[in-house]
Length: 297
Image 1 (cartoon, rainbow, N blue to C red):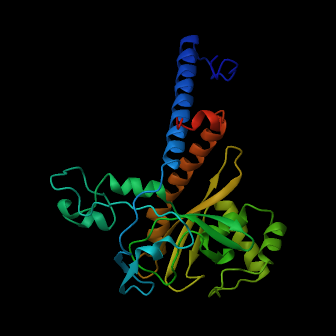
Image 2 (cartoon, rainbow, N blue to C red; image 1 turned 90 degrees about the horizontal axis):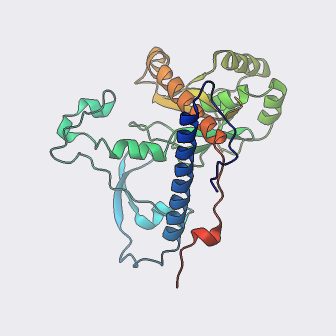
Image 3 (spheres, helix red, strand yellow; image 1 turned 120 degrees about the vertical axis):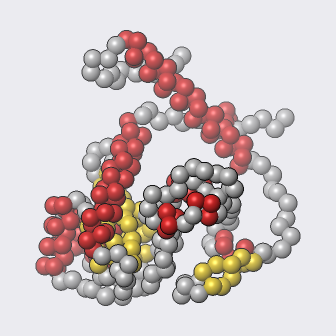
């Protein structure tokens, strides 16, 4: 029996032919999801590979912006898994696809720029997304900025929420009394921000963020950090996370940040929210582990 035999959702004025084709597409999507999950299960069941012969050393940029090195074992951090990806920079010789329209890559000759396929792939792995945890924001995904600023950000980094554009968006989505209770919790970030607003200042700032739908932070957390953030919403319109663009104050005036980058950020946040709402509207499929696990006979 089809997984959508009892599917009753219909769009206005749709034809029977459209509904049958749409349901057939849904079924293929479910089949594809099951196959992907089965392949993922097979990948997880692979036996260990060969032992790495040495603790390789890689060049990197240190927290102070100076050149330094890091051993492969250090890249794992607290995890037992490390993903390695060969980023083609410069791009493959003879690749004449268009170069970026903006940013540092647009200033390079086309044969010296980054691979057009690698760049969006890496962007899909990361975003600049945070969620609220007590009076801090916690980074759950990020894309590195091309210039080093005063603070180092990795997945799991904490910052005081009220001094960041990301945190302001999340706090503004709450009733003011709830936001104040959250901010009363001690920060676990270990950072002393440059700006400590009073209760009246916090209330005014959060009302402004709520009214315009985005937040700006201008060197409130640390010198040189200027950013704008927008909310990510679920299908019910509830704010579930926030997304931002971070720049260096010496390079990007507020007018450029809000006039050029903010519209693109709002567009991206809207697209992500729409995708999440669409995901929530699709029936979720649970694959029986016994079915997904490949036979070892």
